[in-house]
Amino acid sequence: MGRKVILLNKTDRSLRGAVFFCLFSVGLDKRLFHKYYYCAMDDMVTKNFSRSEFACQCGCGADQVTDELAIKLQLLRDLLGKPIKITSGVRCLGHNIDIGGSKNSSHIPKDDGKGRAVDIACDNSPFRKNVICCATEYFNRIGIHKKFIHLDTDEYKSPDVIWVY
Image (spheres, rainbow, N blue to C red):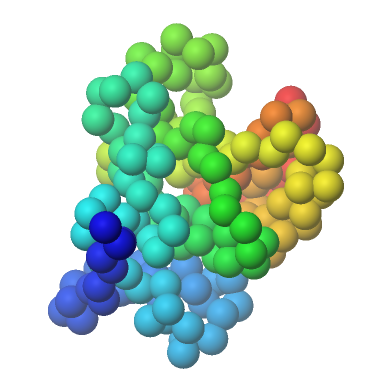
């Protein structure tokens, strides 16, 4: 069964505004708006990412990410021209503690109930280099590990940083 993706109702002003802001903040032309402005049916958040890919791995049901994160991740995937595997998306506080995550992790939902970070699988150097080069087009907070790349859009933390685990 194919994916069902439809255009959001144009009266949903808050989401339209968030999408416009995300696209313009990365310097994209407004004509591309409709290419990324999708409403998910069958669990889809963007054209290539499902809500279940962002879900907390403990099974608690936490799976909400900011529109900015989802859109930028989709833009990155489009730029790479290859699928991206999310290894860690939203984390509830309990799961974050269980795996030894940072106390102020951007994976943990803020007061709005949405996570602001993902880790994506990177198991070889050429792909890692390509991801890092492309990710800097859209993300200003990047963490590099030998097995994954951390990307976040956490407006509560210092921008323009790249770190190594």
